[in-house]
Length: 290
Image (tube, rainbow, N blue to C red; front, side, top):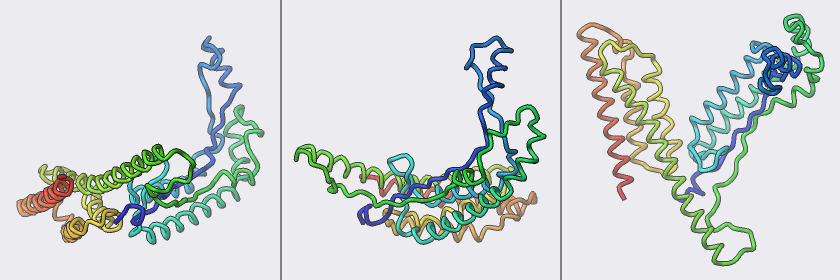
């Protein structure tokens, strides 16, 4: 299936008020006190404590993490490839996160006048009423949106140029699309391979402490493979499904034990993950042998 028909390009755009301000007078004083040339140092002050923006920042972190986990890299910075298989889940979850972001921003803006009154005493000599925009202006600085565009067709050029140059551009774009699909698929393999390799290395080290995410990360990526598999590689989907079931059947608490029985289980589990690691590597090499 052509890449143009198996995915869309999506760009996640988030803006937020940083609540930081350049203090020119203090910057001047610092340079003057240190006998340094003006402009050698800049003092930025946080005019609103970070705790008041915590809820907004947490949603932003979740949105970015979800976006990158559920898309594949594209050739141009600022946009990523969203496989068609993952379209419905992505748009639903990102829509929910957008609503959550707006709710957190509204909550902050509602409390904004009260917050200013509270921080005025804390800043003392650094306080300057002119640093604080109106609540209405502040709200406009909080935006979250995801924009989607089709993957370009190699023959889609609407410019009046010479035939020779047009053919060159078509060939160049066609090559870029092939390279982009290969890079996207390689990234998918890399995510799965990296999670498996980390589990193998950790579990093969006797007594090495690990978190539940060591196994949960494998499950998460294995679940995502069918939705991100832009090449439609059914063998990879099947392999991911096997890895998913193996991970879910793993007893994490038993892996943490120090008794002989637990160590044996840890060794056996590591061996199982290593087998799948080798299968992922072998499948990748076989599909990229040409």
